[in-house]
Image 1 (spheres, rainbow, N blue to C red):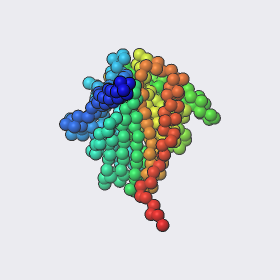
Image 2: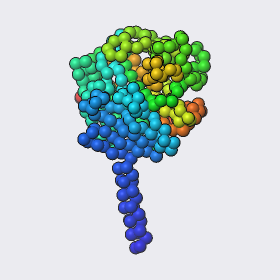
Image 3: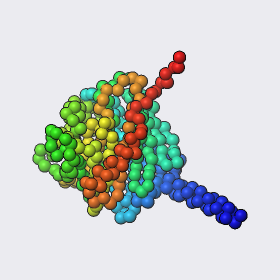
Length: 335
């Protein structure tokens, strides 16, 4: 009898512990529309208050790598209002639709994160939903659903990430431009050929054409791309004192990877951004089509080790393998 009672009390204590742990890891502040998260190795704030002085529907600040105390987000810097991570432009072939991070979203707090839903507007005739979730000990996951209500040629959503001072970028390109994509890690440094423009690495020749079709000279924040070698992995990272902030996505949904170079951050706008980008989709979307994709940011002490980065990417692929890349918006009537 004592044994049964002891087990019962243990289960109650365990449930209470897990519930308390969950409350500690995630705390939604309804007044500020922000989520405080605290994982074993990572803590920070996801602010979703578009009425704040920054006017952003979502941006990360106060992000800290807890074991080392390293500041990850660009707090107190020119990019502080943009935050560490957000969804930036929505583009089509030769055109600009909107800047998602300044469009108001419907907020749905979850037990392990938050869902943001952007409803269709005149400028963007599509419903876009993104679920942010946080996983121990160092992971920020993003799951995206897109429902288009109009035909959009070469539709794109640009994911961006901005880092604190002192971080330096890296990408994985194919070691040969033609042939198998054997990954080669390269670091980006300012040089005359790319100075003042944003380095991007396309998946293939079609991706290279999209980067230069005029879409980035429309709307706000005109910029030009320096087209680099083919990427071998849809993954880019910034590192500082062994701490890596890695951004990755599904190869079939990332048509290009971007990363700024190391340079004079005080006088060079590109170097001062310390930014990473994933150019998503780049395919024709038809009215009534539903697409889905996943992205992940991992932050920890990996020492810029290529083998570790590739291992982390393979884990990501294994976890999302069963998730469909499309979904049906309107159910088919059964006869």
